[in-house]
Length: 253
Length: 260
Image (cartoon, rainbow over all chains, first blue to last red; front, side, top):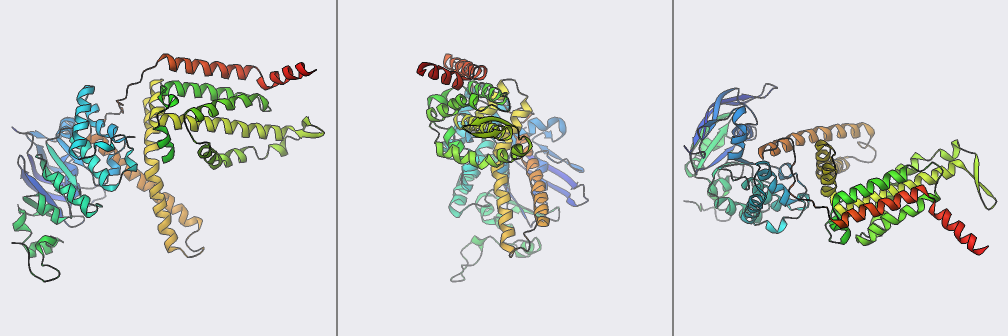
């Protein structure tokens, strides 16, 4: 069976201070799907993402990546399969140069030197950041940092990409470039975001989280048309689906 | 600090030396300088040759180094501050003026500070922090130590920015002395610590994500060449010589011997 699918069953989790973060979350994502996870602040998006990579272990329920359950013993394999892009690139770029940072994962996988070089070059080329390879990460702009952060994950050749707020803190052009870049990936993608327009552009399917549960799960276009649902989940229509601010006409179908 | 990084990425004969050679040489330098007796000044003078030669060969601007030295100088200045009061015995005469041991040892402390700090700056400026970390690890220092140093260097920028943002936010809402006191300062430091702790956890997650198992493996390969060995042995021999014989004094005797 493919490693590209994700099955989350009845997932529940509470933080040590007693906050219930997830209450029975269930969904399944199949090979090659691109899914947006949206919801108000504190709806449980980040907590859910943390489970996909085994950073948090569920109080009850289970997570399976392909046919492998996420448990302590399977973590190394899971983390190789599921590439995670963090919200703050500064958390993700910790080596002294861009090249070494992108190489960090492949080196830890124990790959031979030429293979590492090929992968690093390929990943950096993919995100159009090869020219940055000798620069220290803290000297990059926000957009460059994001691109390199994505390259660090790509170099591991993951099957599934999990991203937390990929478009936060980017200027409109950098955001557009990011969307175009993500659109070219064939990985199974899970994107937690408040940027509903990005979800509209990239994801065919959207899961709305609300108070630690799945409030809705379906085709993005349908979900974003359901104003009542969006309102109760602390969301509103993506700008592209709202009326034109000048003439009031609705541009979207 | 960022500038130090840029300087370290230059390509000069000094930069091309193996980091281990430079770290070892600097280590011998430090040990020799630090081991002088507390009243020696003259004997240390020849040691200035090393940082000066390295800086000029490595194209490190002297003004930049001087600025850095001034920035750390207060430590050295305060450390020896009370020597002139504590040690008042006159131990040498400059013309007719008697100079107490306290002043001599104070000058010696300052001299040592200048030499050791400039050597350390020159080392980083010609090798880069990464090179230094790698070298100390290859030379047998514990892995944890090198990793710590590496991360300290990487995140000091992030931490500095965070601290600056916090202090700016405070300054914006403080009017005159209100809100700028020690009390708030303490709380801010605590905040910063907590934030750092959180970040450390996120960084660790990111590392685990990419297969971190306690060892930071570095890809660069190091190769010691004859040049490196010559460099290390040559300078080390010079340092030991400078340490064992008071070269300026010998030169002085020699010159006065010639004249008389």
